[in-house]
Length: 274
Image 1 (cartoon, helix red, strand yellow):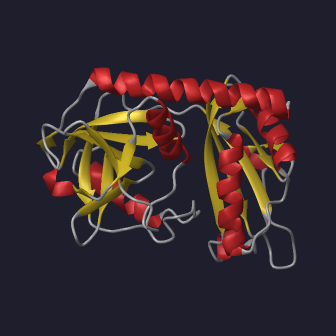
Image 2 (image 1 turned 90 degrees about the vertical axis):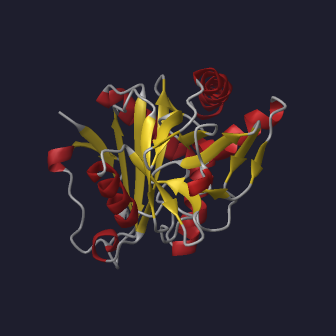
């Protein structure tokens, strides 16, 4: 039986009920964060909560619980559900007009393709890309287009041909010895793992540079990397049918840097939140 946490109560998915007039349903008002669970605790917890609070402030929605209580609920649900390693989704909606916001927490094990990803270009940008809006329409359409083309994911490309991000991941490119990532200009999500990759690479003497990335210029000498909270770092084998550089050694080097940061974050959480 799949369990979730709804407004502080652990319930079976089949019995969980939200008000029909919740503005998350009627108006799409809400945000979510997806965190990685590592040995029963969330990774980069405070960074995710900080980003969620910033987005909720924009929507003038209050996070129903403070950070310590949210941390407790996540750990409790992961234990009850038997999911020590996987994904945790924290969703906050505006709630009904005369009530408090709704807080929904879900945990699950996710399966991902084992092969390097096949990507397509998708000529659109997400609205409210700078926050994790619960409206997933543009990303859903882009993923549908990718699957119809026999691909695994899509890169959002603007009218100038610049690639910004994937449907649920930030973008990095290793080209001519440099590690590039699109700038934060309001058109991409300020990813938690994006920030961590930039931090660990800078500490390792290999800083990433914010720079526009033109999709049509990416080819066999370029390594395209995607970053997200649960999957971490993955590489791509093709974009619009063009072969890309799949450098497994470089991928593993970057993964080891990120893995160390994740482990350190989990340890900090145990020391400060449990």
